[in-house]
Image (cartoon, rainbow, N blue to C red):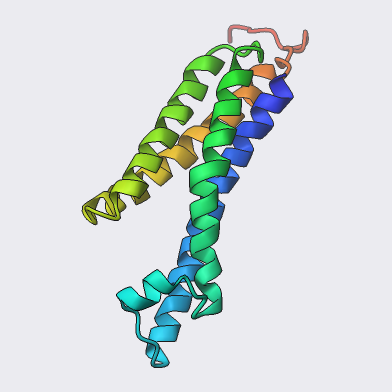
Amino acid sequence: MRSVYKVLAYVLAAEVVIQAMAMVYAVAGQGRWVMEGGVLDKAVLESREHVFPEVLGYTIHGVNGAIVIPLLALLLLVFSFFAKVPGAVKWAAIVFLLVVVQATLGIGGHSIPFLGALHGLNALLLFSAALYTGLRVRRLTAAPVAESPERVATRI
């Protein structure tokens, strides 16, 4: 169970990286499309057409953020009860809470753009918490280093 818990934590951290990459890919593609004469207006947004290939980044970001990451965070929380790692439930709950905040900020950012800035900041917190959660397992399960008997403190 520890391994599953650790892998889920690392996968969550990787998913946050994928989210950032997908958004930058989409925004960069949209910027290039506009520079080449494309016009982005309400009609384009409502048409749901793929007017530039990088629009796929928005789709990836939406699916990951709305389905994949929340599901992984929920699984992490469930497995934390069986992982037998000190603090596992606490850190899985922190990650889960950050995912809930992230989704709320992402949805709210469509109405209040400032929440988009907080969405980016919270993504960094979520990445850090997920990575730390995985690293904790590694540190806590590593075998302690035994002192060699030759090392004896002597007075000089």
